[in-house]
Length: 173
Image (tube, rainbow, N blue to C red; front, side, top):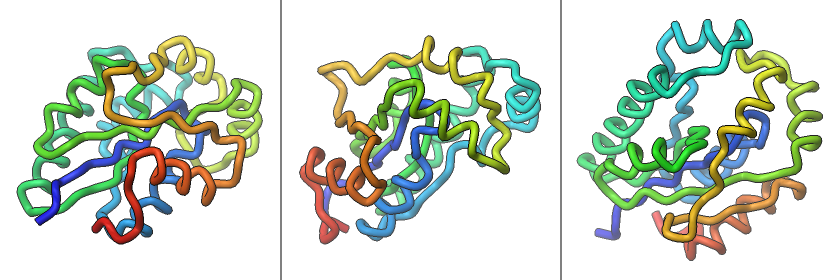
């Protein structure tokens, strides 16, 4: 059996995490999870009201995602998840999961992300929280297992670049 890997597609809201993660999951044939779906109701309400989450709000949510990754690894499955994972400390929690946890940081200029958020509907995260996310964001450090990809190209090309950068291809399932 090949090594269990978890790809965490990370970045600020509006960077394209869900779109790119779904493409990666489809290409690799791995299960997909949206971390936003695992937020406690209190977190969703707080963000919907335009209030940034604190670290104390995030720790239980990150542990839920870590545990989900470990459960999938125990079942012999590699995964793809979306998670903002804005700080190294948050990524450290996810790295505690069983299996190899790797990151795909989707990056773009603030005006690109802001434009996307202004045109997005049906999401609890308001555009007004982008500045707090950008100030919280700690890009991948050299020691972290992952790649940073500019999202100023179509999502299919972002996925191509991520797979190349990680040394994966669609037959690595």
